[in-house]
Image 1 (tube, helix red, strand yellow):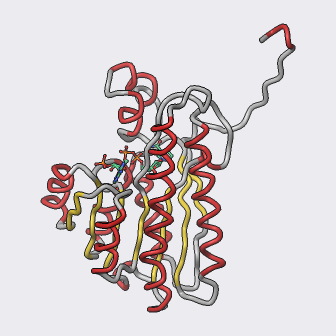
Image 2: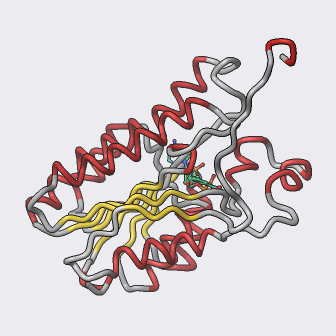
Length: 248
Ligand SMILES: NC(=O)c1ccc[n+]([C@@H]2O[C@H](COP(=O)([O-])OP(=O)(O)OC[C@H]3O[C@@H](n4cnc5c(N)ncnc54)[C@H](OP(=O)(O)O)[C@@H]3O)[C@@H](O)[C@H]2O)c1
């Protein structure tokens, strides 16, 4: 169905990266797009560029999120807000774990609970969850991040079952490395971070992820694009390591 058959969208994590690119794309398609993130100044600039409606909120702050969800019938929900912290679970602090669970998982569960029943009742809607290849593969990273993203994957699958019989579609977008500020947000905004994750690599841009989302939403209503994994061509997951005790 043409994207324009939908009227309203809520995009979380809209102040930068993939979320901001999705807002730009959906505004170009003529939707009323509500953009949610904490950095109100970035949302104001996005609004001036695109006409989106800013909501300077913390996605883990349940009361204002509930008020927003109750005030508008959203046709599209894009869960893009996400955070990570450096280091593995072996060195994680309690706040790191709580933050990742709150933003990457708990907020999506609550937004789903608050918004999707209305979609089901109206028999129209599309939920897009941004997970990560960290939810599908193991690599050197933060175990809490991997765990929350794996949960987003399973939630996306389960939501299809819960919505069985309704014309509400669910799409999981599973990106590998994308050229956004996420690395600066996780590791600090420095030349070293830029050199380590971005500089010289051939990477998908946030607008490429937004294009994939637009493809899924614009598919005929008979078509549910369930999962799109998007990695840089020059990135592959996998690998196997085996060591002798003496090598440790
Ligand atoms: N870039 C990649 O390589 C990559 C790969 C795989 C998956 N992903 C996933 O893609 C999604 C988008 O990431 P990105 O690459 O676009 O990174 P980004 O530029 O860091 O965007 C993250 C967004 O989440 C928002 N956010 C963080 N905490 C929030 C909170 N408590 N309440 C509301 N909003 C919050 C941030 O806005 P504020 O700080 O203004 O609140 C920002 O808009 C994330 O879920 C990420 O895990 C990214």
